[in-house]
Length: 262
Image 1: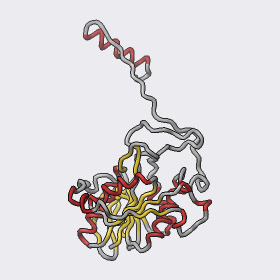
Image 2: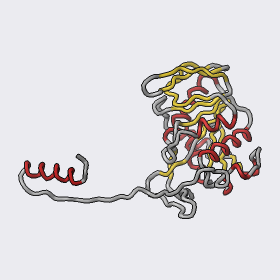
Image 3: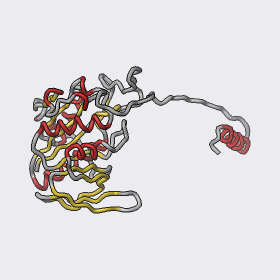
Image 4: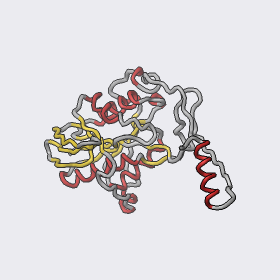
């Protein structure tokens, strides 16, 4: 079983700079963390490998600092990793990002299953996984909350659709996106961290992509543009209330009415 897990580094806080020219986030040098949903994806891959054997390759797109995330994935049990890193990929929207990742998957080669987290905590579109599958012409299932069964030929999963659930069965190769709590992600192992500290992390650039049509990548390949993006404003207003408890309660209710919370 050859599994590819798509992962991403996301901002660790709301304090991140925005490029005023193109409205994209400045990711170089920003404090980051692994997208939480992708940890569920990696844990799902590890559980499948424990049952069927095989290999797990982590795929991500971003600056070279993504190596930190990959090292943590190695410490959790991933076998290989590829980072797609090139200035030509910068500023990608959902379409360009999913296309670039699909080309990275083609460059990796043979695979049976692609696993993505349901969504990322920065873009929050939940569209990347299904879009990758469409680029690769693969069957796919989103919002997977449970692995019902997995064999050498196919995977059977349960989808959480809000008001109802659905069980889907797909033959390999295919793609799934997993929801939180499908499994509890394991902690990185200190022993594996030491064992894998010198393990190779492959860097693929634009020149490694099977399709070198520049109009499909980065800002040039992004049909959607951000009109405005800005960090959330942090404001603190402190009000001291005097009087009896009843007077304070009435003052709080009046404040809520003034702010139109009631």
